[in-house]
Image (cartoon, rainbow, N blue to C red; front, top):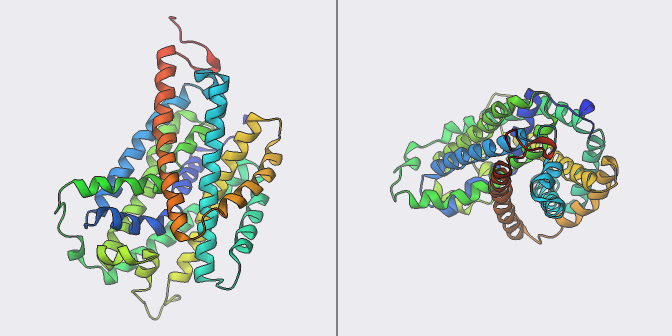
Length: 370
């Protein structure tokens, strides 16, 4: 990795982290939370999940700053040895591909259901990731610039469309608070694992920051944005639809948007605008996942980054086809959620603990005094 040509600014890193976390979860989280929690306390589960994600980010940042300018694929071998490190790297590559494939398949499902009903889903997916490869082959700099440009736009439009749901908002749908105690809230933490998956990609991107010392600031702001958005969405949707209705809606977000209408403005119905903008956001999330996987393959093999990017297209396509329907896609999301928990918390915590015990830092050197 040539750091001179692959450095990204702090603002780009904030946009990149936010973009990685804001994706298909906006469509799946409300329904999954409603099913798991079953009470109006969905927003509490979302908030706790966000706080936990921030704590995991602090662990990741602390680990990465001990091995400055080295990505996860490089420094894990210094901590646990070559072979175990390669195994961890291969698993992380597979995980990134799994998330990327999940995003592409979800994009395909949404596009087919709402926009292109008669178009085969494989055609939709292929067109999406062939556009993506054009951007991916340019490396991290054009990716970071595009994300920095588009993420604020998509976030602003999303917030606008969701806030307009105040028109059908009923405060009573959010009551009672903790009516059945804390137990249902804790059950709702599992769906947030998928929603907040993506923070673990800091294991790769912190090494590319121009100012790595600002990584904690990146984690705070980069997580605060998506957590706030998901929290707002869950509150508005719960108030506008009620928990019971959210359980039975295939896509609660669109159900909410279809509930209200504003006449005399440029858009009277907002679902099409929302869908187009959010497809862009899911596309950006896929870009991040594919980049991480390609960077890992290039690090572990003799392939160049571009060669790895092209090679992984086939892997993404076949993984996309594994789920036979939306139920299988939801199960795939559950697997991703638990795997995300492993790579965002368990693996970094163990690596940091081993590095501290062995007093390892960059280049495998031991800290002074040993």
